[in-house]
Amino acid sequence: MVSVTTIHQQFYKNALIPPITLEHVELSLLTPKSVADLITSLSGKRLGVTASYGKKCVLVALAFSSESRVLLITMNNTSKPTKFQESILRDVLLHNTSLEKHGFFMERLAAALFLDFGFRVRGAFDLVSGRDSRGSISAYKTVLERARPQDAVDGRAVKLVFTEQASSVLPRNTKFALRAWACYVAVQGVPDKPDPIDTLAKDTKARST
Image (cartoon, rainbow, N blue to C red; front, side, top):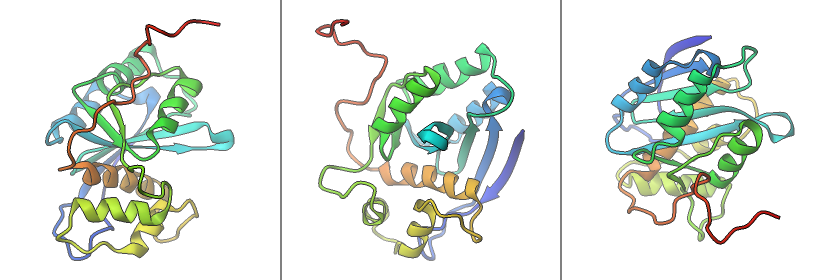
């Protein structure tokens, strides 16, 4: 299944922000063009990224975002992806150190990628600093306010997008895509962070037990 739709940001009141193209594709149908379209739309090297988890906290979807485009990849599809399709996700996005991946709870996402699918990730960064209450609506609202201080943040929209409850206002894929878009917006203009998450790196002091 591949679908392309248009969504609109919900977080900033009266902000003149263009519509967002949402491409939803199963991993077994992922093509180089889908990823190229995302990267071409990117301004700079930073991507927003978020994950969705299903039963037993298994990762079921990934979403990568620029300002104008979100690529939502369903992982638990019925058709098994080929090694070529897996390599597109792995080599062009996850292992690509020229693209920074920024999101909330990135350590959980990195662990799930490896434990559930055997994928590793490089150049990943967590958005919420130690002084924020991680996982709270106030933390999500704070990073969005920092990103665009000139625009008022709609706290009700933040809660609607970042809570797990089903909504008749926003479809599930739209909520998920907007989380990725929020991650992209939140990190723009933030100083570079040291020590990215890199699950491909090996510690020379580590030993097998």
